[in-house]
Length: 156
Image 1 (tube, rainbow, N blue to C red):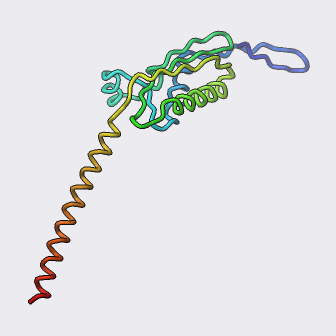
Image 2 (tube, rainbow, N blue to C red):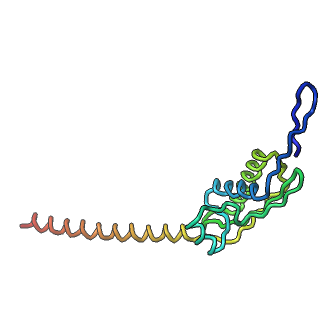
Image 3 (cartoon, rainbow, N blue to C red):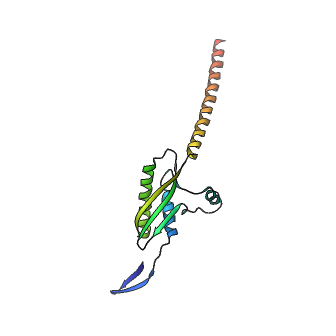
């Protein structure tokens, strides 16, 4: 993309603007964070490394770039319970909008590949539900004992 500057009806070329595929993959990766229940698919090693270094938003994303058009493949993990078609459609729309707004490139395709389902959130919710149930049972026992001791006092 050669940028031209119009001065007194003379066109002066002032240079080129080139956007790397990595930049586009980061834009797409950041767009993934806007959709609830969806994250970019990373390997286990990537997840461990990211805990110690800055997050790489381009992982799990492949970009094909031509002069004015881009195609993006995004590999994602979806949380258990999320409607996959709805999340994928929303993800395609956000990625397309963000790339086109930031780069003036035309997005030809945004392919979403659901690599797996994350049950971590579900496990955490189940664990919390069990903890709450235990506390409720405990509180019910305490209340029952208190009521029984109150009845015993009233009878005396």
